Amino acid sequence: MKLTFIGNGNMAKALIEGLVGTYEIEVLGRNQISLNALLKQLPEIQIKLLDDKENISNKNIVLCVKPYSLPDLSTKLYGEANVIYSVLAGTTISSIKSNIKSKKYIRTMPNLGASYLKSMTTVTGDEDLKEEALKIFNKIGTTLWLSSENELDIATGVAGSGPAYLALIAESLADGAVSAGLKRDDSQKLVAGLFDGFAKLIQNDKPANIKDGVMSPAGTTAAGYNALEKSGVRFAMIDAVNDAYKKAKELKANN
Picture: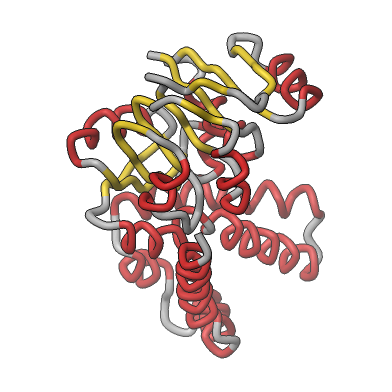
C-alpha cells in the first residue's frame, strides 16, 4: 500500500520514520532542499516537489500541512483521492471536504513519539475505514478510536500536546536535581530512566495507586508531593489540557 504525504515538517517526518518499513512512502513538499535532506535520511522514500497541478486521484493522502495553508494547498490539487488521513489540529472533516475532494476522510492526532513507534494516536472519521486507519497508525504506536471530532479535540490536549508538557516536567525534575547538587548528565539520565519505568507502571495501574505505592507517611515523597500541590501543579495541568482544547476549537472555528 502506498501513502502519499503532503508536507514534510516535524510531524510528517515522525510518521514517515515510523511507517517507512511497512508502507511505500511518497512525500510531496514545497521546498526541494528539505525534501532532499529527508531523502538522504530515508532513501527508501520517493520525493516530489509540489507544483501547481498535482493529481491526487485514487491516492491515499496523509495530510501534514499547517491548518492555515489548507485553502492555498487546495488550489494546487485536482482529482479525487481515495482517502484523506488528516493530522491537522483543529481542522474539521467538513473543512477538509470543502477544500480537498476524496472518497473517505479520517482525522487523526499522532504525537512525536511516532518516530520511535511510540505515538499515542487518536482517530475518528468514516466508520467503514476504522480498521484500516487503526492498522496504519498502530504501526507507529498505540491508537484510540473516538466517536466524534469533539472528543478528538479534547484528546489533542493530552496525547497531541502532552509530549511538550512532559518535556517541561522532565526538564524541571532534572533542574531540581542539579540545583540540589547532582551533575547535569547524571540528572538527565536519572529522569530518562524514571520516564521509561513510569511508562510501564501507568499502562498497568491507576495514577492514584502508583502515588500511594510510593508515598510513605512523613517521607521524602510526601514532602515533595506537598510542594507540588502547594504550587498548584495539578490544576496547572488540568488548565493546560482545557486551554489546548479551547485553542483546538478556535482553530476549528477559523477553518
